[in-house]
Image (cartoon, rainbow, N blue to C red; front, side, top):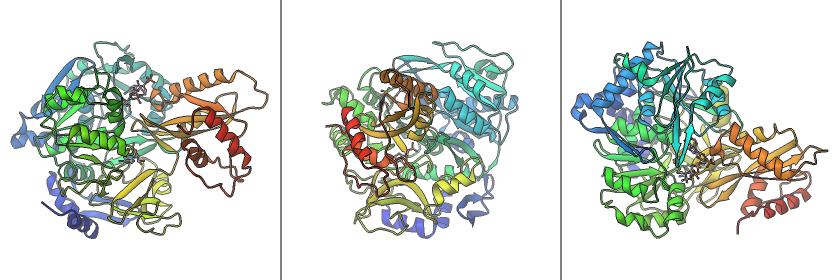
Length: 631
Ligand code: COA
Ligand code: AMP
């Protein structure tokens, strides 16, 4: 067994040698000219000059290496009462045929394709088929409304959208196609083609000349081979919430991504080829990209695609049933899923029904792992419970307990230590490193390791402004926290207006932009408040335009509908209240951080630049009337 400290030191002292060795885990058509091109900081490029194909590495090579009969994907869908098992050989046939179908529509290397699909096999086929022909996919989470989809259509300018007629969300049936139709209508970029998978429980209307049905298209398609792409070519764009209504288009390259994810499967998750790995997330989020689809498949493991929820499909024993039935070695999910199970089944009655002796480790990420949930899960499962911290931008863990290298003792409340490749530091607001146990801005010294974002899609300026400007020479994570005397990192939460609802990343700024369009509202602020189940929930405070004397309850209901319609149900925006004024600095900046502290019942320092301190008393009263801080 290796020693964590040695591996970490090697990774930051000689990143080129470290990642060149890791790159041996990937098959290349042509090896790189340079491991790391650092000629144009802060734009770093990994494996420049190299060519490879991500789909080849995730699918074909396993068939060529004798794993054709091994299961690649198990689709387990309690909502449709079905389980489908796909071998690597079958995956290769299906993906190469669908890739042929994409080519027959004129999709080629460098084109962008939006995928708006529920948790079905075809979502993974679509992603892999794009990778196969060098097209750049952008998966949009199905919980986003038409307006959010339209924003992404305008920015990504796809030649094609791939969707399904609908989804089953817990006990509800949702039609997806009307959302796609509306998004295409409102988008200024006109999408010429749309592939629609008809699902048996909801039929989509197809528009002549634009829409093609998945099966009809595939029936006439011929399999196509993998296209060599540059290691530095984009594999995908994944939009993630920033502080404004315009999401950030995080780019993932092909080469660095494949190297890093392949390396992470063993080093972080201790997964070998042939093991069963289950990430209970959604393909619309980064966890779904990295650890439902690409990571496990690059490693030659079996991955599970779960179309269900931790509770209610049918009960709080769903996770244990899957682990037992599919012999899952490790599960990766968000703490909120465990809080939901704990709420339904606090004594762990359901787990006793299943033999889960195959299960070796639980990995949690997406939001802070509160010690209560950590202890509850540990006591219930009696296996290591590993918290790890990462972001859409990095694509894989920044801080983790790398069990495949050396399992370190867990300190509840900390995701453990920096993953090799990430030189994590804490700086004060002036950019000076702080000592142990002092809270500040968590940053990563450049260069970031392979697999992390090289830039933002069509927006180098925003990339530099958002991540590289506040602390030159470092990547700004926007998370605050500290490192203790043993080198354990503690992540305390976002320093910006991004919030985490049930492990989903959302922007309060985007919600404010929607609310601000209400005709009766002069200004507003949305803040994240603590929630026992979902971690955080948004709360809106708004000021009415002078002269408006409508029933405030009616306005509140309208706001809920507006946020649902414009952003989606996933924003979970349900609570708001009217206030006479919002607290601001003398220069007019709304003091959201101070209001967040009031809602959380945390001590706060009276901002020296506040224009009128009395407003804070009014805000405290209003929040109190809404139940904040919770008792
Ligand atoms: N498509 C359409 N709508 C969706 C959706 C999807 N893929 N996913 C969620 N929604 C909707 C839900 O139906 C719900 O709508 P409603 O307000 O009409 O009821 C709303 O968005 C909020 O969904 P969610 O936050 O998932 O709440 P929930 O109460 O349905 O479930 C949990 C709560 C904790 C069970 C659920 O959030 C969960 O399983 N979380 C796991 C976390 C996770 O996977 N995170 C990913 C990062 S690792
Ligand atoms: P996303 O980009 O959706 O993965 O969200 C990233 C954000 O989620 C981070 O910036 C953190 O604020 C939060 N986050 C993710 N994992 C953790 C964790 N293990 N502990 C604390 N916060 C986390």
